[in-house]
Every structure is written in structure tokens, then in C-alpha cells.
Image (tube, rainbow, N blue to C red):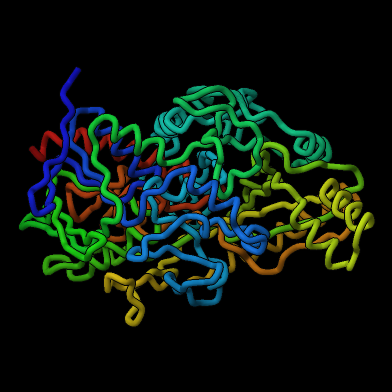
Length: 554
């Protein structure tokens, strides 16, 4: 048994480690686990609080109806007063969004040990091969600095690290290009998924299972999903993967995770290597962590914010920002909802909150003109919206019960995601006026979804009208505004050269040879699928690159 190598601390609270990671979500946790397993000392700095699953479950049970009905996934997670995250009940304006599509970029994320995967849908999609070559294939957006084939083994690794349940039948996979099977068989379709597929699949919409970070057999200490339907905002039994699983694994091997440690300053030497990061503790005292390699994994908003915040003499526009691309190209899968009542009972609401998705419009020659889309059949229990609708009709007693029952059984809600293009004008900057309690500038974001998305929404509307007609849908409704999906991408974008990109294909910064920025910020083409699996795969690829280069940094 090798002796665990741990970070060293001085009496004053400064630290030194081989590898310093900022951010303790899925990406930071996986990198920490990989590198500590190789015998390196690893320090993880997290701005937010440490919470327990039991506490989150209790908070959710005690949440007011208005929060639950409004899908408040943020409010049950206690926040560090010194490291705010966006709140919407009531709004705290920590992230101020302006621009033509300000409402489409109201992101929710957690600053908590374990990160935002505490309250995710656990969708573990891969990008398709064509998503990596948008510019060369369709003449829009940007290409990745790596190909699908280079990313593919890392997708496999990430699927095994998370424990993804996915279909073994190639006809139900999207994409089909895979070198290894999923770690475990898909979460079985409930009645609603199977019935929906039987209606739409003959028409090319191709409802397939969503690959999910949930256990269908015992996996790494996690129990089997039992269909609580409560994945957002918290899986009460821990069957769904959360970033905390990797954090705890890394700690058992010797990694040290410090909560309530807000990094604000980055030191560089004469060769522009990073030598240290500085953090503020919950008393406002400053400490310094020195290391050989550094990784910032603080999500697509906090990473560019920190890089801009940490500008120094040698890097006056911000760390890793000689390209002027830090904070630019912000993206998310803006989307909308479609709801109707079906003739046949669908009985949604048993099993995971999202189990299946229409991927027919995910790719095609049309992408040179307008955005692809995916349509998730939401499997979230319809009882709350049914109740709101029935109460609005003024019903009471037995009539009220019957109406709620009917609407819950026949109600359908579809979530549509659209694909944005990277646009340098969609930009995060530091606020001149708003500061967090530590006195650090809050993020400002300017956002416009662009015509590519607007045209894509029009195409999706037509497709949905058709889908509604297949079910003889009543009370057919499409929401008019585009909502955020919290898939934050692009702010530290990947590319081939320092001229127009922040990081390379390993998420290493062009400007600093020992600094990596893995995660959503690096993603150069958004596709239409949830970004988490791509973020995890990029994190594992970066961890591999760090371990190869550690010898140089000795």
C-alpha cells in the first residue's frame, strides 16, 4: 500500500500541493480522484459550503408549495453568505444578464462541495461526430480542436466513472459510434415512454432512452434507482450520480478539500507559469496555495469570472486571456416547453424525472441554416401543474379530485432544447458596480440567442404542432419565451490557436503551460445535448494530460 501523499499546510494556513484544483463539482472531483490515485498530493478549493444529502432532502420536504411548483432547485441548498450563487425565489441578481435574450440566460448553479450535479437531470449524452466539425461540415460555428474519435475513449471513461445506464440496442443509441457498451442496461421505459414512442417513432421523431447517471444495478456503493421522481432537486437515496461521490473517493485517498475558500488572485512567474492561487476564508483572511499544476473547474461562469478577476502585471486583461476570448462565446441550450392533454392515458411521473427524448431533429443538412433540437418527454409528475389548473377552474370536492386525476394522467410536457452558435459578443464581464460580500466583482453577461436559434425555434414549433396532432392533443400550448437550461458553455473556449481560443484540445491554456481549464467553458459547439458528460470526459482527458506533464514540472 503506497503511503498517501497529502498537501502540506503552514501554521498560518498556507498550503502546498503537487496539484491545486479550484472547484469541487463533477470535473474537479474526477480530476482530484484521478491524480491522487497516481500518488500526487491534491488540494481542492471550493468557494461554497459543504452540505449533506440528508440535509438537502429535509430542506426539500419543508419547502413551501410555491417554491416546489416553481421548480426552485437552488433554494434548498444552503449558500455561503460570502460566495453567492444565483437565486430566483426571490432573485438575488448575483449574475446580471442584459441583451436581447437576457431571460434566456438566467443560469442556476450551485457553489457547494460536490457542485451542481447535486440537482441535475443526470442526462449523460455524448455529442455526435458531426457536432465536432460544425464549421467544416455545415459552415457555421466552430470546430473542436479534437475529433469525435479522439474524444470517444474519454466518453467511455466518463460513462464508467459516473456509472451510466444506457441502451445496449444500437438502434436506441444516439450516437451509435461507441467502442464499449454502457456500464449497465438502460433505466426501463415506463408506460408513458413506451406509449409515446409507439406514436411518434413511425414519423421519424425517434424517441430513445436518455443515457442516465443512475444505477440500474448496485454501482460503486450506490443503490438502484427506485423511481422517486425527485432527481431534481435531490435524489433522496443517492442512486443518481452526484459530484460528491468523486470528492469523497478522492478524500479517502488523501486529497484535501477546503470548503468556503474563495479564490481571487493567481500568481505567475517570468515564464508565465502559474505559481500560486490565493483564497479568502470565511473570516476574510487570505491564504496562498502553491503547486506544480493548476486546474480551474468552477463551471462556465465562475471560471471566466475568476480569470478576469485575477488579472496581474504580466496578464493585464486577465489570466489565460491573451486571445481576449475569456468570457466570450457564452452558450446555453435555450429552450421552451410544449404541453397538451392526450386522448389515451400516459401516466407520466413514475421513475426518473427524464427518461426519454426525441432525437430525430438532432442532426441534418438543415444545420447550415438553423439550429438542431432535441425534445425531452418530461417524466416529472404532473400532479402539481394539474392541481394549479384545476384550482384555477374554481372546482372543489369530488369534481376537483377528478379533474386533478384526469390532468395528471393525460398531461404531457415536452422540453425542447435548441443549439446556439458561439458568438464573441455573448460575453461575461466583471460588474463595475455590484460586488459580492468579499468585495469581488459580480458577473455581468450580455446575451442574444441569435437568428440561428430563432429559426430553429420556428422549425421546432412546426414539428411540435405535428406531434400534438398525432395524439389528438387538447389544450395544446407552446411557451413563447426561451428559458435557460443551465448548460453553461463557451466562456473559455477551445481551439487550435491562441489567436482565437483560450485552451487547446486537452483544456490546457495557451498562455500558461501548467494551467488547465477543463469543463463546459471549453466546449466550442454546443450541440443540443446536456453538456455534463462532455465536461466529465474533458476533465478526465485533462487529468491524463496533467499526469503526463507532471514530470516536466518537477
